[in-house]
Image 1 (cartoon, rainbow, N blue to C red):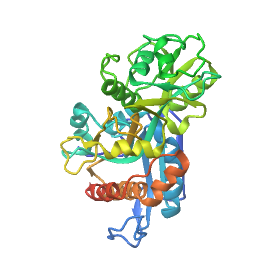
Image 2 (cartoon, one colour):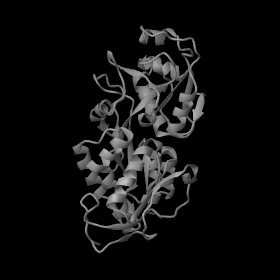
Image 3 (cartoon, rainbow, N blue to C red):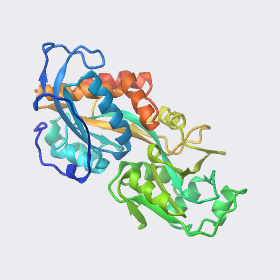
Image 4 (cartoon, rainbow, N blue to C red):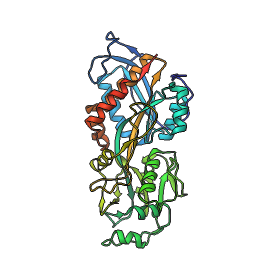
Length: 369
């Protein structure tokens, strides 16, 4: 069974939507240019209708910019995105409750099998649209420029290190005056691709200090908050805290992470360097762009705690006009204009020209009818 537009809503009501609406019909229709295969990037086809997406909160700022920019190219299309987290977004795609989703992790084997009930035998495709560091945020007045080696960070997050003046932290920060304040770890309360990416880093970079398998659910009881913004709010409001969040929402202190012989602060450029060193994942879909990230790199100038957030869409939709809408919006997102809009809004690293070319080729394989 291919995607049915009004499938059961799994998690969409869990968060407020980001909506930029224009006047238009409720059902997608094609203009007098119908039959053209030109998308919004080329300006050859005027579309109208609505698109419903959901998923990763890491993309929230970028998505706001994408929706606004896309409205400028297709003013008769309404795009709505519900920032409910990657896990809930993947559930929505499987259930047929979203036309496309954002996710900080690609579909696992079980999810890839389940999504064929909605998307057809071809399953779903992953298009990398958002490259961003995952920052290690903390709140420790008087201690700026905190440095943490992978093992020290892993032991803090596993609560094996419980005070800020611990010898391991002091070794990483020989010039800092560290207080004896207790450490409070803050993690995501919702199933999160950001959590999964962070745990993948800990597993790869500090296997002797982090005993847990990567998951979108945090394994160690600690202080919890919903979404990236919730984690940062708790950290900013409480001294002695530390946690992880998409760098786009960080407004306070953040740590430099040990990479080889140096400590590296997050930046879009340092995050993009890790992506360039990564290999494609085997999802069973020809041309798919899911990635196995090089989490344990020791390359100078790389920031290893990084997420690549995807837009995930069906390979096939029952309605050809809905397929056209999905293709057109995704083509705008990966365009140079769309990527610059995300970079300006969220500080993300624009995808490379080679990645853009491959992404447009993959998007073009989406079918309808």
